[in-house]
Length: 101
Image (cartoon, rainbow, N blue to C red):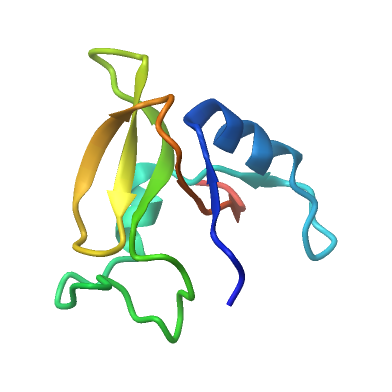
């Protein structure tokens, strides 16, 4: 398993946009719904099947900003399956994805 990448939200967005991995350079920060789609809400600690998602059970940044205060962004917890908003200066896990929404 690789070491999780942790960054502030703006750094996470730039990290994914500039990532070249496995011969691809079209990576991006996933949407909140994409991250929620990875959850198995029948599980907790972690709230996903580790066979398919080798990752930290902590929060991961989503691409969307919180509409009421754009200094905050959404994150999804892979430990308990919660969705929360955090100040963008927090350092949280990053999971990049590719392909269209």
